[in-house]
Amino acid sequence: MDLPKIAEVVIIGGGVMGASTAYHLAMKGCKKVVLLERDPLFGQEATGKCAGGVRYQFATEINILLSLLSLPMLDRFEAELGQAIDLRRCGYLFLITGEEDVKTFHASLTLQHRLGVMTEWLSGDEVRSRLPLMSLEDVLGATWNPQDGLVDPNSVVQGYIAGAKRLGAKCLTDVEVKSILLKNGRIHGVKTTLGEMKAPIVVNAAGPWAAQIGAMIGLDIPVVPVRRQIAVTTPISQLPPHFPFVVDFAKNLYFHREGPGILTGMSNLNEPPSFNQEVDREWELKHFDEVMARIPLLENAGISSRWAGLYEVSPDAHPILGRVPEVDGFYCINGFSGHGMMHGPICGLLLAEEILDGKAHTLDITSLSLTRFREGKLIQEYNVV
Ligand SMILES: Cc1cc2nc3c(=O)[nH]c(=O)nc-3n(C[C@H](O)[C@H](O)[C@H](O)COP(=O)(O)OP(=O)(O)OC[C@H]3O[C@@H](n4cnc5c(N)ncnc54)[C@H](O)[C@@H]3O)c2cc1C
Image (cartoon, rainbow, N blue to C red):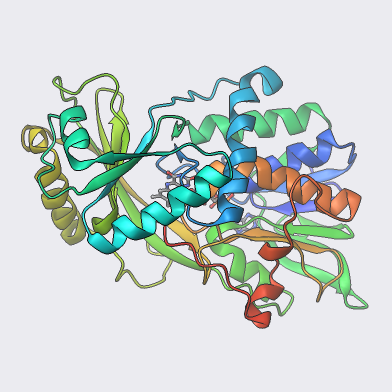
């Protein structure tokens, strides 16, 4: 497909953020939406490499409110878009092993309850009796929400892209944005590997590459790429069919059922920012020691696949969402810091409202503005894995 010469909105990046934004703009009647993805396929970067977890359990009001709006959109996804997304409500179980974490998790439970998210506290004994296959002697308790779960990220992207195309949006692969054109200090278009196109609005949906897009117009978007890796085991016959998404909070370790095996990841907090997406075999050994200590059954399993992807990390682990006041016509949907997949549906809608209606109205997103960094209004989220 040729590059259109003109658009109302150009979206840079075809992961979940770009796809959701394109669909919601088109749904709201925007006629000329053009989404540009440089890879040969949509959703192959952070989105396609993610663990697929969706949860209500967060520690800040804004993240909980985003989940309260976004997860029901996943419930309605197939009916609205005709695309199955393999949504499984397996629940998230956060294992707590430190006294301090008991206090902070109780505080976030109070916040969640106030907002209508009925996460439960389980005692150590309750956790041990629910998961007899696991080694949990040091667990002091856990938070459990059976409404949390898993989704297939690729299907979500495909559903939004197909939906956007049906509504007239142009979604192109193999097109890289090389620079952004400004005229009199405002957005004028983009220069791509297929030529130039004029547009008064550009959306930065470039995930881990968000800072590079900002740099094209001299803007500092404080998002850094950080490698995170995942391994999936060979089948484990003793695994019960209903196994939750377990997070061993103090170890930054997580695992959930993936087909007949287990998908597991463990974040290396000393990983320096970089675009390196090679699997770190040394870290994988540490990771496997920890996960086998929790699920001794894994000693008999092999690894069927492994990969590394990039988190797009912002300084306070919250997204940067909305208009950028410094440059008229430039919008960001960046910096989701390891939990963007689940907030992609609502954030695409909120950004479409901000662009077309002048302000997001389904939820106030002022606190997520890029300006918070220079104003010193950071919102710290500790519940990041
Ligand atoms: C290992 C791992 C596990 C994760 N687990 C979860 C989880 O369980 N739950 C959850 O909610 N989130 C999870 N995440 C986070 C989630 O994947 C991200 O927050 C989300 O996918 C970000 O989406 P995005 O569209 O912003 O980025 P991406 O999916 O990376 O999309 C950005 C796109 O922009 C394109 N691009 C960049 N520059 C250009 C350019 N100049 N021109 C054209 N295209 C360009 C890229 O090719 C890319 O396709 C995880 C992430 C990783 C890496």
